[in-house]
Amino acid sequence: MKILRDTWLVFSRQILLLLRNPVWVVVGVLQPLLYLLLFAPLLKPALGVRTNAEAYQVFVPGLLVMLAIFGALFSGFGLIAEMRAGVIERSRVTPVSRLALMLGRSMRDVVTLLVQGVMITLIALPFGLSVELQNVLVAYLMLGLIAMLCSAVSAAVALKVRSEDALAPLLQTVSQPILLTAGILLPLAFAPQWLKNVAKWNPFSWAVDGVRDLFNGHPGTDHVWQGLTIVGLLTVLAVVWAAREFAKSVR
Picture 1 (tube, helix red, strand yellow):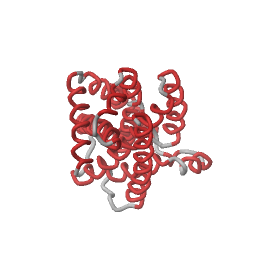
Picture 2: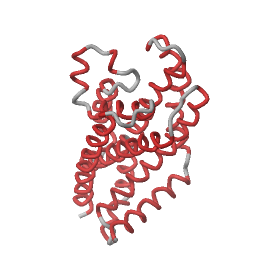
Picture 3: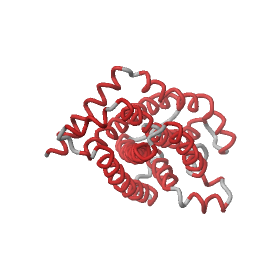
């Protein structure tokens, strides 16, 4: 199919550019690694668990969701740079699908996230993290959907505002409430009831609960299928929105 071929062409180019400057993959892992080494040990007394291993079972899934959100949410800055350099404009003269222009870039963000996620998971294993392979694969599926969702939203917003000066404060304003109400750093079970009610409107809080259940060996809970369903539907909507913005920008 043409859309698959076009998506592969865009994805291949984006990956090639990334491999030429892999420092961003390392930088993307550095901050979560610092959280893993310096913040996670504080959770043992905070959560009231007996061992550090139990704390990592709670913290690492949330950390991976945070990596998926913030790693992809700020990818729009690169798109603005491409627009300024005329890359998007030159797409006019090519027969490449407008949807593929977006999907190829989003797939790059998904692959980057999965590489970073595997690295974080492997680093956490010596600290006591334990997860079954089939469960972690489903968790990575949810993380990949989150990354594509955030990447598509970031691209659509970047194509709208067309300025780093506008994009940066907008994303910061949106991302902070998402982080604080998703239960990423600490489970919402410890939150007051009003905060739990607010968190129900945050789709990423459902995803965090689902990934935590998968890492703790409970793939059959409602949190898993609810998280996959909510994130999957939002990803489809975000991809459609971003594809339309690409079509407008190169028309």
